[in-house]
Amino acid sequence: MLIRTETPIPSSEITDERLYWNRREWLRRAGLLAGAAATGLLSMGCRAESRQVRRKTNPGPYDTDEPWTSYEDITTYNNFYEFGTGKRDPARNAHRLRTRPWTIRVEGLCHRPGTYQLEDFIKPFKLEERVYRLRCVEGWSMVIPWLGFPLADVIRRAEPLASAKFVEFTTLYDPEQMPGQKAPILDWPYVEGLRLDEALHPLTILAVGLYGKMLPNQNGAPIRLVVPWKYGFKSIKSIVRIRFVEKQPITTWMKAAPHEYGFYSNVNPNVDHPRWSQKTERRIGEFRKRKTLLFNGYADQVAHLYEGMDLRKYF
Amino acid sequence: MRRLSPWLNVLVWLGVAAPLLYLSWGLWTDRLGANPIQEITHQTGRWTLRFLLATLAITPLRRLTGWNGWIRWRRRLGLAAFFYASIHLLLYLWLDQFFDWSEIGRDILKRRFITVGLLAYGLMVPLAVTSTAGWIRRLGGRTWRRLHRLVYGIAVLGVLHYWWAVKFDWRPPLAYGLLLFVLLLLRLRRPASPPPRRPLPGAEDADQSRPTHEAGRLLSARASASGA
Image (spheres, chains in turn cyan, red):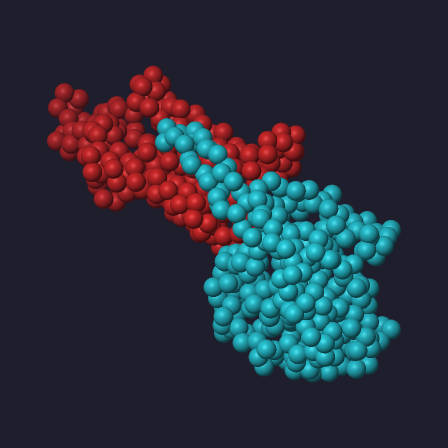
């Protein structure tokens, strides 16, 4: 087991008596779909069987009490272009990634930069479970029980200088392990960034596990960012470098399509993607779409970070 | 037009229905991943384009192989494209928008990939309706052919719809676009439609009562080509 902490990790806390099994209503027979052509009718039975899904019974202050998306869906439906652009590609190809040994560099404008082995990097911090909503910019969402620790812990340990205004994150670059990087679709390696106050926010965590287990490679092993009020692509995976900088970092998606993806990328139903609406989302496993919430439902906690800002301009 | 031989007929029908059967089976056995509705929407869209391109491949195939029999496949391929486009559109209206017409209206006005997609579908409707032998007779071969040239525009709009809809990986729509480009290019070598049935310009110079042997052969060859 890779994850070693002073206190027992919450995998022991997530015991079955703290959960209850809940029969989820899956997509019932969606009915008969009439085709316009003479071919007739398309029988469209959507996943007739129900699935057993858990939820947290005594949620913490940052947890949602919504039912969790199934482990299978969380680990087989991923956007991780380093392993291919199909949703199922990462689950198929991520076995190539070697997550040990894993080195993380903390550098830039801070008093205590350092290069850490993953185990040493994590060791001082207490892991906790956080059940967060994840909203993808493509219009789907999940509820994921992460295992991690606040990014703020890492930042305080590094003691950023007063001149540090932003934090920049970088994913591993190794086309042999990450075959998707051989294709020139994005400017590799993947880079993301947060304003320092966003990075220090207690909702922002570095995750090393989910469902009480080690993070599967396709979900960003061995360590990834989780920023639940922003679109999923902000939550960078397989991090090798954390850097304190003065200027706003130019992220990979900003480079790829500057008019479509901004630095902030806060979940916002009122600001559409230039090519599609962000008003609604499909929660994976649900039939009907649901309304997307401002800041992905975390407005009470994070809205103050953006007071006075035009969220259309700073999308 | 001669009918397809029975076994070939079955084969074509199976080919047309295969994607639908595959998707239905995948849905039933939960093999379409975590987001089956989106998967089916994307797949039916791609199959629409594939059948459209297959329809457009018939004429080049006839020219390359010299066998006109391909023509008997064309209507079925065209109707298959229309069928998959219908499912694709219905999934959008129903399971994406839940028939929220004001939202759909905004989508059409605001999002160019929806605009061109719907336009392409709208143009497919008259072609599907007039695909029967009765309509060919009613319209007359020339009018019918002219109307059905809309298929080029439909294919271009379809590829554009795909191009604008993808989040970022432009490689698949580019592949469809290149294929379409090649299929259209192959048509430029000769006029897309047969010339009107009148004597060749060269034939007028010759003795009208005794056309040259060569001109006569050409005329009869063109006449038979335009009959298909």
